[in-house]
Image (cartoon, rainbow, N blue to C red; front, side, top):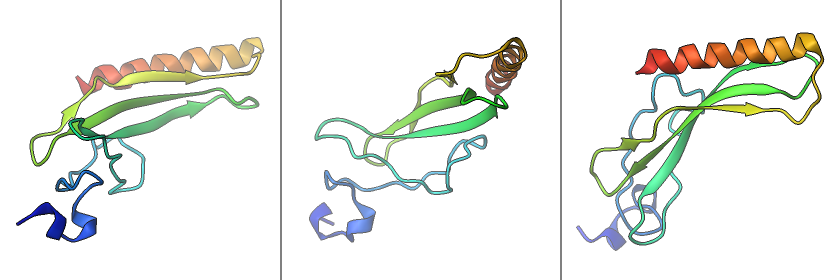
Length: 114
């Protein structure tokens, strides 16, 4: 079947088939979250993420994240899971300790995924 004749929900912006794959079991994003269409000749991709925790009384948080890429109906490729520390705040000693504890928890989670 010609891609241009497929239902629009079954193709991406490049006219390639959209393949619905499950997220990694640790992904907290909405089930079935979509793919970002690449440009012609570039894979489609989508990110997967999970919050490890937030530091009380601040905007600081720690999460884990990776990117899944795919071409046509081939197998997905996953980037390594990384740890993201997000903090624009100055932290007091207790908050800094909480942030350090969350980073250590994230490290343990990522190592368990290997």
